[in-house]
Image (cartoon, rainbow over all chains, first blue to last red; front, side):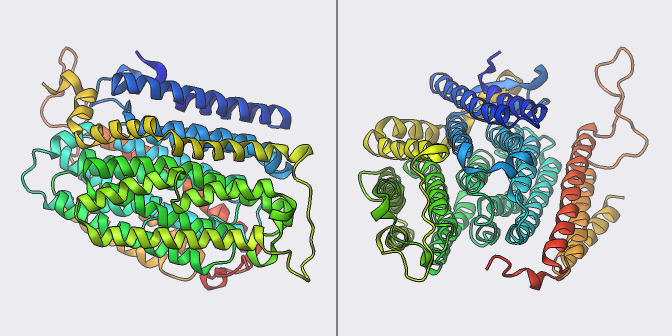
Length: 501
Length: 115
């Protein structure tokens, strides 16, 4: 039995339990935070290497054979996602050493961080649709608590919107699971895909597919279900924002990729056409929202939405190259977006505000931070040679090859508007002089206890450059995952194996 | 029996959505409670209702005799109830805390606390 697929879930659960035991010792919790997420990162890299070698890794929980027991399955997409979750988890834990504050630590920040990562990894690796719901809830409960750490007025309002809409989507997901179970009599995703591929009447299946689209669309913040995201992501601590921005919506995107390749591939013309419209509308509304705002984290939040559109576009086009682009985009986006949020935390410590109007002059006092901001910002807008250029290039190329010219046009315009928003932040925060009448409470962040905020920012910026300059291995991984996604029989074969005959 | 249950579940979904569209936050949470219960009942009903047929395997046999109730759906519902309970407990504490901070049980008062 191969343990590698269970470790990314077990390690954070264990680290979380241990940090609850050391509730009063902040030092032990911090050490566990860095060590636990570091060990998780190592385990996820190991899993990626194993998956790269074997294609699929399946583990039957409690040795109950599939499709009766719960299985953990790692294919290339899932393995890539857990590595990204390992990277972001580790970066956030290091950043939190100086970025999170005593109060949050006192109210259980670190145990919640581990629990959230366990939920995210579990959702990526499970091969059972109801188990996916359970991991979603684990992740949500942890995120609820992280969201309100601090208990300020704005956080309460953000949390109510976030909690309500996410619970609503969970219930729609549960309804869809109930209907799927009534139709197929199984909860194992491979088994469901296998059974539905032989059904003649696809009408009811398409209805269920739309329920999944709404449920995961809310989690992924796709149009028209994204309203909870800009209402809540700018309210918690910056480290929490970065973690959410990097991982949570991407779990929804991952779930969309999973069910719309493995299970709902009967009526592609209809379902994926809807996905394409959703993708285009998501890109546009997100970027227009960002253009209208003047608060650092709100702009970034709206950009998450617009970037989700690109990923869904990769799924919706449903050609091999488009799926490569979608997966590549997810990899690029998670690293870049988390990094931008982490940088907004550093500027907040310097200036004491997130309002662009009240900031300025950072390039003069701290040119290093300016450069560190420009790397992910320009990558997000898609300038070569950074990671975002190749991500956008693959997707747009796939769009042209699929002759979906209007969506390509939307994607290009959105890329331009993204550049506008990033330049807006650059000009307001870094380039212009400190506005008059606003007290400059500039604090030194380049030394002393604040030094830990810089480590993950530099680490993630280097990764962005590396993906851009040495994109080939990343492309190969994305290509392998796309090949597996387009041929669900591989997944079904790996999970069910002999049980099918 | 299934037909009656379908109407009951449909009514619960409708009532839940209606409650969630009200301005009061307390009613919002009541809507969530109804919705989670409706979803649980839906799964329960989807598995088919067979009264008085426990899924017990007689000694010596490898399969239950005749038709029996589906234990998996019931296990799923049990899990969903527990999760739903935990999450709703959190939601209730959250609205209480929000009421203390914002001092209003009205969604319209919750538009711009972050300004």
